[in-house]
Length: 117
Image 1 (cartoon, rainbow, N blue to C red):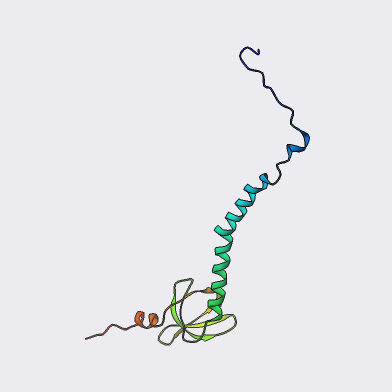
Image 2 (image 1 turned 180 degrees about the horizontal axis):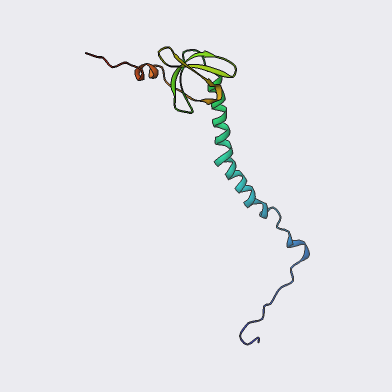
């Protein structure tokens, strides 16, 4: 049978060299560092920015909710925000439902009434 299949010659390895050592840990460590910079760090940065934005929320700020509602903040509470979405039309939303703060004047230009002749 050794005519078709060559015999495998195995060298005896020393017993202490079976463990990979520090070289075997470099690749998994590199993967962990890669995932940290790719996923974990940007997500924590966005969370921090969201918390800062919600802390800076004040009356008169123009915001957009996660549902896409544009409005102006009328009252600020610990958990809820009263948002004016049209003239004398208010909606209460939870504080964490606010997605973005818009530049001043955005709400005013969107709510301009068309002139009738």
